[in-house]
Amino acid sequence: MILSAIEQRRARRALSPEPLDEQAVQEILIAGTLAPSCYNNQPWHLVPVQGEALLPLHEALAEGNSWAKKAPLIIALAARACDDCRLDEGRDYAHFDLGLCAMNMMIQATHVGLIAHPIAGFNPKKVRTVLGIPKEYDVVTLLVVGKPGSPEGLEPWQMKSETAIRERKDLAQVVHYNKW
Ligand SMILES: Cc1cc2nc3c(=O)[nH]c(=O)nc-3n(C[C@H](O)[C@H](O)[C@H](O)COP(=O)(O)O)c2cc1C
Image (tube, rainbow, N blue to C red; front, side):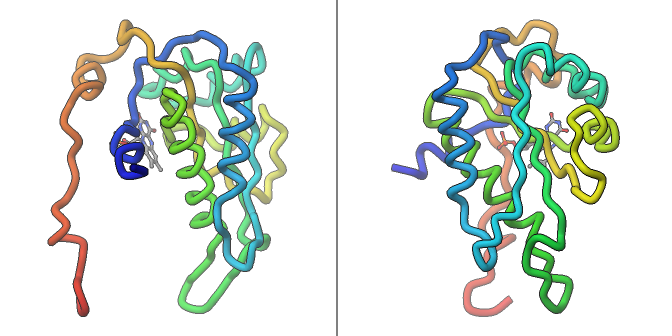
């Protein structure tokens, strides 16, 4: 039944500003840290931001991500390459493992009826400054979390995407059975 939870997860933008239950927040963070990582290096650093601390973070959002200002919780995800496996052929695993951590958090959030929407549209330098994240760390994504809310204030295309059918490439385009 995990596939249905994965199917339910959508990057929706219509959020309610209602604060989240603290246990739900803790469980999302725990889910993130239960992700696998290369050599169990656990390179992730998570900075959950709630309440008034969100206000300066809003300044770092790209214009197209203004919808995220309604969220009661934004989690910054950061990692640095030297904390994880760095193997031949460009295989740096810090960002990969951070992505696994993010996905676990999204699945857990979805499971408890929340929206957890990852974004790359932000100014990482500003985020680092506002949250005190040391400069050696890459702020790879912000995970915008909240209860489903009103679509009021969304751009027309964003409103449409709330209920749009999910777009994905066919398996045949991306799966290469036995040989590419
Ligand atoms: C790394 C990453 C960066 C993203 N950045 C943004 C963003 O800046 N703004 C936004 O509205 N959505 C952003 N998204 C959400 C994607 O647009 C969304 O996941 C994609 O369209 C697929 O839709 P679905 O998640 O509902 O299946 C991002 C997603 C990922 C994984």
